[in-house]
Length: 596
Image 1 (tube, rainbow, N blue to C red):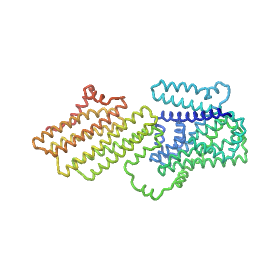
Image 2: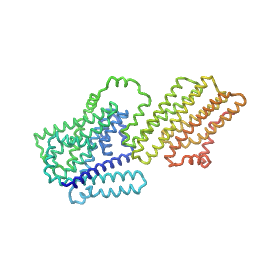
Image 3: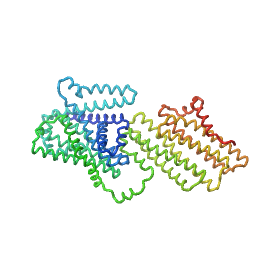
Image 4: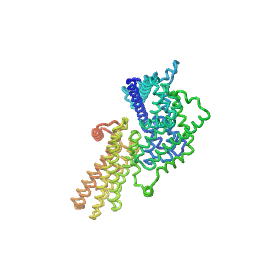
């Protein structure tokens, strides 16, 4: 085997791994986070968990990715440890799909149908279609399909290149002698474990083994221990991802490890014990890619079938391994801070699946919106009846909203560097704007609370007319806040369109209240000091409405492809939209001020 053959083999391996990565990313992007959402909604039914784990892994083509996601689910409290056990078992079965796809490279024969099934025959067709989708289609779904096709083609081309490069090894006695060493079960398992741990993918390591089969020097006796080791080596990814995670997340990673270790031990003992009596004839036969796929599938199905009835035992074993300390027990007794669980959704593990991570960001932002709304409404209540406890609650809520903005902003910036779909990219930009508006609303809530506190400390109160007018204004602000947040949470475009007319009415109310107060000031019905307080309150009300308008417009931008927000708003306000003017007049009648 020459230096150039070695370089060709390395190049083929690089293409193989890259193709697997591209195809996996394309599949994940095409699913748009739906696969992960299916896992999130898992039930306590262990059989359903196994089936879904297998199905999701077959789609995203990576048991490691599925297991890491499950560790993240358990860490964030989305999934229980008992639910994770079934998913992990199913993921081990689902990952065998890749080996079956790769086994197509071993098809031999001159029959037209057999020739057509060879990757070297149909991959070029997929490549042409895929590159056509990527270059000429504007439809994002077709682009994702094109990415999958190109990834599959590169994967198969890399596999073929590796196989062709290692063929000369068949004539190298030293290579055959090395493979003979792997007939020793312990050495074979160690080799498979190390290889898989290094490249972080059992599917890839099984593919490499399948490519070596073309040398005719890999016997089933050597292949079986290597495959067993590969199944244990794939646990390294989940163990690494559990570092710094919660106790249950660490236990999830250990469930994966114990499942493969126990399954491998039972399989190996049973297989070699039977071989001692039966003497399987195929042990010394040379393996082929399809045979490797069969062994890989048989082992994982066997391990799941044997250990499924004892899934509770795996859970208990993981709990015994990762024990709960006395300090942890004390913390678990204490009630969790409200909303803290929502922030756990911003798990670094989910960034690898941008579609699902974006859905989580929506959920966390929705909770942040609720906190801002709660802070504002409590502050507005204080204007009617001041309460020190409620005032402190406003400050606490504002601090939480600040914390949410920091965490969300940092997470979204990190997420922006990933390969996002066009929709998710626009949504990410919208969320970055929205969290800023929600944070400012909570700041205005604090300002309103401080004005209520000042009125209480100085024993100030509005006149009956002033109080009635402010109540109308307050009602309009409450309604626009409710309207904008419900539109955001439910992605309701119809409701979002109703926000801007009401914001215009609030601008009118703001100006009218100021003019009426000036008239009362001149007639001596109101003091200058109270006038300053009222001015500050109305300014904060008006700015809250502006931020509500921003929330609605950001939502409309996503759905209506609006690029220039100012031009869009001006188009509405300058009588260019009859529906807007009609809604404005209707709202103006609903929030009519009492006669002065």
